[in-house]
Length: 543
Ligand SMILES: [Zn+2]
Image (cartoon, rainbow, N blue to C red; front, side):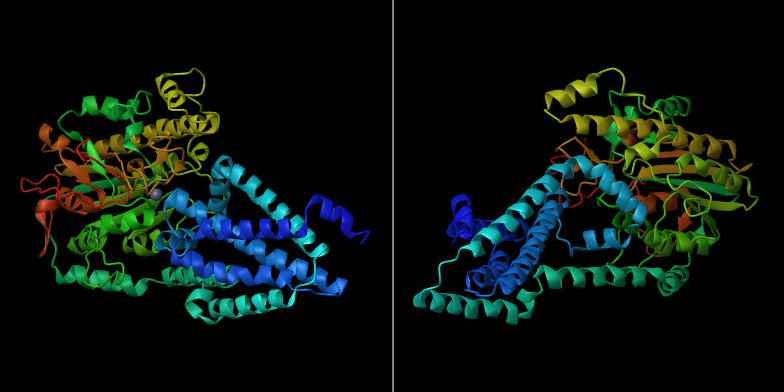
């Protein structure tokens, strides 16, 4: 009696049970909706019933308190992680987006991701700690001073337990219990990584598909085509596309020098908000079948190689899936981010030497793919340290973000993002200058630059990162250059989609094969735009 008094005065047992029930309900509703939430609630309820069951021994009461705390904590954290993924990515943990991101993420990227999201997550982490502490206190209070259950009370508890056992007996329901769900999830991630680690069979199939289409090169003479593929660059942040901060002075200068030869596609879109899916679309002409990736699909690199191009793939990414699905179709693969002795935060500019080496190679027909990290989070690591061009004075962009009520951390993210783009501008402009300098004598030179997807940095919502749910996640730059012939200026206003970029690249390489679709090549007179279906709301694709 003496022990139970303080507990009763602070938190009566019935109120403690009420708090636990409310907490469990919030956890369930945060993580699931509709019928699924009801199913998961049936999995949580026995824990609360167990707490209400009278137990005489103090030792057993302690064991029970610890077990119930651990299980309720699992439900709470499960709900929080699910709510976080839905809010930021409109995705469940077992969606292919999240599974492939997890399977394709290195420890370094996890660290970078967590530190870049720290400001967003700080509040959530604080709330989770408070919720867990409250759960512990409530469990202690609920069991410290329990009135014995009346006979009807016991019958009610037993009846409820029988009902809830349905949840535990039914496999599709049980699957959503955090203790079954997350170990299965980890297995799925591991399987996916294994499946990627050897895709030689699929690459062989893609080479057979290419040979069956008998690709040829329609132009005589040597040719050098460079594809600069960047990451997470939103065209709205490039001064070349009208952004108020001078993020792309070099490309703007080149655009003046090369007028007629350098085409800026004003309305370029990705149809995917993440790298892997975007690259799959781009290299498979928008026709890759997720269930049968090799199948009868064509891969741009396999076609180009079969037609007689020598292919280089040079990358600043450290990425198993991209490596397996695309890079290894090339003749020469250079992954600077994997070489020992390089800083793991290696800058894109370090690829320029590799590019020049490939450009001076005497092979007559060359396709060189340069895969940049671009402005992929963490933005601060995508430029040389100490480079802060936009931090000093408040400017129009800052003023606008203040007016929109954006928090300080987001305005700082935008400054870091724009600084990364300013550095990136140097690198991209340099790839074009190098290409221009090394156009083969009496031959063709072409260069294409585009981003795999966009990036949200306080454009539509308070978020910095990949963004499947907003237009900013899909707004990309796309630039084309060739030495001759030039481009008609009217082409610049044609809407363009990244998953059709392969058709345009094929044109720059003068590739011909059976099964071509010229109406998806933005340079072709028969080009027929079809707007993609995006998970984000886009009112117009021509702006
Ligand atoms: Zn990406």
